[in-house]
Image (tube, rainbow, N blue to C red; front, top):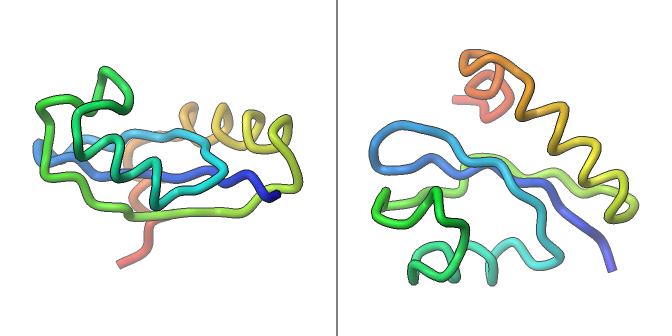
Length: 80
């Protein structure tokens, strides 16, 4: 199983970074208000970026790297 790191754009324009085994299932949980506390009430949520990692440890390291990026760098990562 591959772990993924992902970025969601919230309805208020903010970005949320997380990790998951199944990004689509995790996005559904976020949309149902059962995901991270941060994303609750910030819909609609849009998946902007996802990156496969070799394992959970790598996904956690990459998530930490992304969270330390500036807002502008995160949006560059997401692309157009």
